[in-house]
Image 1 (cartoon, rainbow, N blue to C red):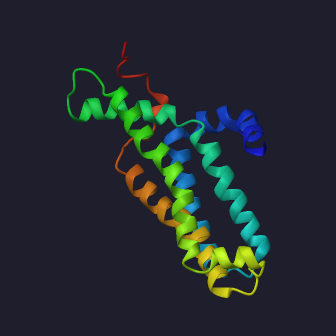
Image 2 (image 1 turned 90 degrees about the horizontal axis):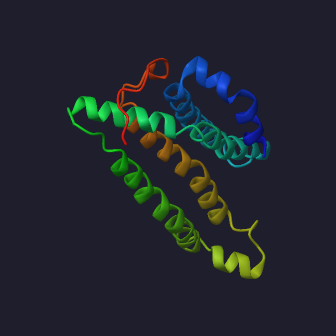
Length: 176
């Protein structure tokens, strides 16, 4: 709820000033930095962990509510870079769906499988999760490492495009 309110209140002002490319780029940097910071603090700092969860959940939601704008710039950049007569917008949206939809389905199963290797199933059935430090370390590692590694991958992929100041330009092409 809070991210939606922030988008409504400040979204157009931030986009007009910085552009969607920079907003998303900054969100990747924040994701990586907070993940490294949380990992270095350790799992004993619960309030920092709560703030990390809140930022990790709300920041991408706020930044990627504007994802279609830079995606159209990426399509224009691709058409200009490879001298295409018509842009590949359908392929870009299809590729985006190809990776995001299966990842949303497979990720929970993969996490439970990893946690079961560290005693998750027995800890749940016996109700002694606090006693299993190996399991708690595995949970903490997943919570910090996954967003950080994904943030680094996203950052490296995002830096491949030069969409700087594209929010000030008129569209280069329009697909009918």
